[in-house]
Image 1 (cartoon, rainbow, N blue to C red):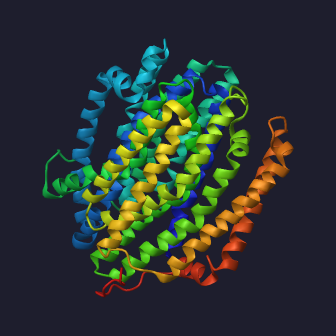
Image 2: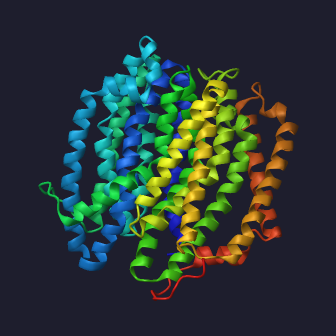
Image 3: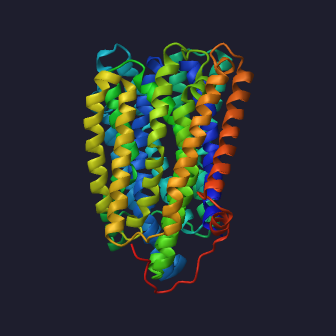
Length: 532
């Protein structure tokens, strides 16, 4: 199967999840707006979700996948099953202990880590603590599910792991539909959503568990034991967890800082949902597919194939994300108005703030996606320390910038800090890959990048003038159907202009499409990589 076809397999499941996420956020915005319950729920959910991405998705896709792939290559399915059971026993025991400790310490965690700004708001702090306590066991389910997903990805069975997250949104949409039908108040909606998150974790774990069994691996529980394989996994996983979850670490920091201002936490969450669509569909798909493919190429000594995988991934990443970034920068307000502006979501206050945050996130989008394309170049070589150092530098940049800009700009200042930190991280990752000779020079890619940027700029300028021309149709007083058709028409027109410009200028060509869509893994050879 070609690289892009594998990307598409993962992206299709992710796209379904993100599309349902739009529906969920639209209903949440209508039910809760950017009020105190919305702030409390988003802050509470951010906490277990950050831990999930730190210690589950980031760690296991970075550390577990290469080791699991090595076990399959060396000892076959039986060796991979034994390794998985050893990891499962240690992981489950550690997660259970962590969950118990966090539940007992939740008031202190919320007060000093998650949302210190809520402590002075009557009722808001208590609500956040309760919601976080309900949702935190979600971490156990999702961490075990991430392990199962890593196994499926290593076995090149991508779809079940990609589709499972959609059930979080399906369940929460059902909860919001029930709340709307029965006329529940904001606090009741918040509590119902929290129990829905916990239920979704159980359902997602069940889906990937069944998929792993169908793939021929049945995992039993083993007494926790520090075997050499488990010890190696933990050595790799700790820095990989920090690196893989750098975006989430920055978001958690942003949430803590934003808690000092009313509505800032929920405004950041609503903007995050929109830009997560291209980030998830492209960035997550690239990271999930590239790591096992790159690990196999390096294990077999095929350095030319490894270099080609990295270059084609960046080519695909930039081809898809540059127009998305330009569209988010230019059309942020019409998008926010279409998606969220109804019910408790105030047009005169909520829309401008969320739109400003979304536009800034758009500028950081290519960096966020490139990070996911660059880090497998380290992880596949079992180097998790270097990206962790860069992640720490990125966090320091984020904190310093956010603390400087938040008093002046409010929530948009936190978005600026996140974008700046993303670009710093991406550039450091690329620079060291080049310096070590792990990034093969690809002349066609170097020629295409400025032409793709030019194509995105042309599209952005056209959308800017088109948005002003259709200002009445996109305004607050316009009917929903008119706004929706106008936004969709502008997006379709902008995409067409971008692709035409990219082909005319040479930023893309049919040979590039054929190479990415039709390319199959080449036989393993011991050849050296191209000159860096």
